[in-house]
Image (cartoon, rainbow, N blue to C red; front, side, top):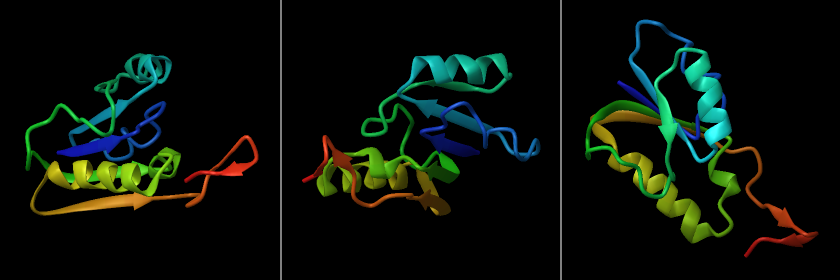
Length: 108
């Protein structure tokens, strides 16, 4: 089982049809696109994922973590992702921009 945290429009949910994948995202509009594409996905906050601990073989979070405004929130999101993993499970976390600017000011 694979969890795609911050799945957006489900771009990665259908990559391997042999894998059971579940996506979640904060955007209900993007989750609607996932549903239209036939993917299992629902609205959820990455800081409080509604899954049992150690319930996934793998988790991915692509271009999500950098959207959190503080290092503490980024770390909390990563911890929540890791919480989902079974022993020996693997996570792929891809970050495009470590520092975000808001109104031309660096996030703190």
